[in-house]
Image 1 (cartoon, rainbow over the protein chains, first blue to last red):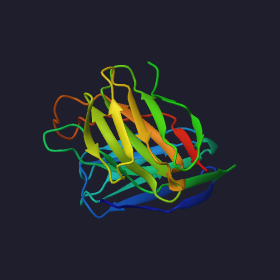
Image 2 (image 1 turned 30 degrees about the horizontal axis):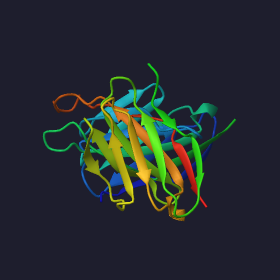
Image 3 (image 1 turned 90 degrees about the horizontal axis):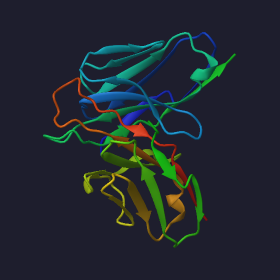
Length: 115
Length: 120
């Protein structure tokens, strides 16, 4: 199956610092996605990227879809305590002629923010 | 709109038993996917149902099965439980567009809170 390598595995930062995490794949994807999961909850979509080279922002979050379609990164600027959680990258390909398709997830980045 | 609901939220079973988990998608969503989340393997895709038919399947043994009803609600079943089946089982729903029209038609999956299954 398609393997996603996400790094770093964990980060401990101080409030106000910027954060960067990335994800690489052995295969290309049509769509790259970034999710955040809080304890006891399911993942929540933060940013979706549809085109190679695309750079998209959502508030303090910025993500890019790599040119090779095999990688993506997520930046969080000026971190705050509520940014704590696990961040997952995910890639998706659609079946030919279909809008259905599975997600392949990275292993996650555990973010801890110290006040 | 209510979100994706999963029942039960917590479940404890013993090896060899079977279990059925339930997922109610967001109203109007026709696709339901199931994922298994464990510390060792991360988030792994189990299967996707659309219009009561299984459309995609991950690499899980036949002990894992599912179904979808006409109201889009879905159940997954695990038979002959093993210790390694202990996990958080997540359900996600979406309303896929009729056709893939290129880069801007991503159809977001909304995840439920999961069912925490513990096998003793």
